[in-house]
Length: 75
Image (cartoon, rainbow, N blue to C red):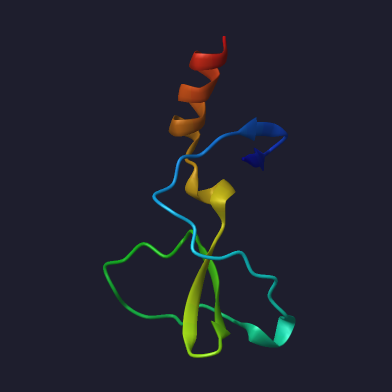
């Protein structure tokens, strides 16, 4: 369940392996790599033990077109 711009939305995911609270010293900026991957939704990276996590801005990920579909379903 997410709160996106004041709207409560349910999202279906394949699975959740863990929920973590991250500390400031675990966060890293996204490196500026020249790739074909769209990184506009990635807000940072985090390192926890030997794992690298990709932090995603879910509000940016939900495009306005997808949000319009929610408006149609509600009204």
